[in-house]
Image (tube, rainbow, N blue to C red):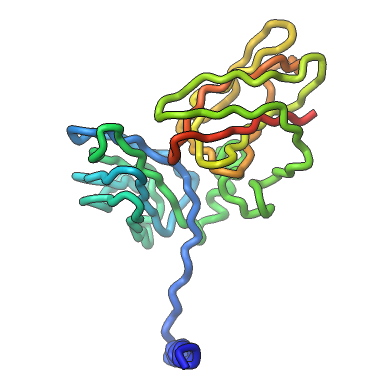
Length: 265
């Protein structure tokens, strides 16, 4: 009887010309860290296109925001949120029309916990996919987050192309160093990292080669590496004899995170 009533109501709404609400397609595009105590200003400005909605999430600690202000492509700005972000709950922000083209979010917030908190920023970009694809950062960053082209990974990612050379676990809220042995004597074209049991952020990834040279990879320090997605990097210069990989990473939403290091020959 309930199913029949629900079907009748849906049919009535359609016959009256009422639009059914579309389901948001959320992708986590970044985050900001918030400390305990006094309100502090921090910003997020990595947008590759327009957004239909934004969503703010926190875990482990409530966060009180005196202001979350958005700056738009036309130079205007407005406050889009004020109040408490409760741990385990989401706050959705509608951005219709011209306001869809956000260039920066400024947070004036503080965490209830002395350990601080992280505000995760997710976006529904359903109406702006082509803009994000045209972003200069598409191949480097966004293709690994928006899995529009291939189920289970970003654009161009195929698990069969990669061989795992090691796994490291990172614990705590601060970046930690860890070393993964490479393939001495074997030529490597690219390497990749893949968080396995939670989101992670790496502030530095350095590769050391058999001839003693070292190179820092082009890592975006503000990028949230999403659980289960691979992020690949070219090896700079002509060196291909990989000796070891030194990573400086940390978990974002959990106490610890395991990260696979992979190589493509």
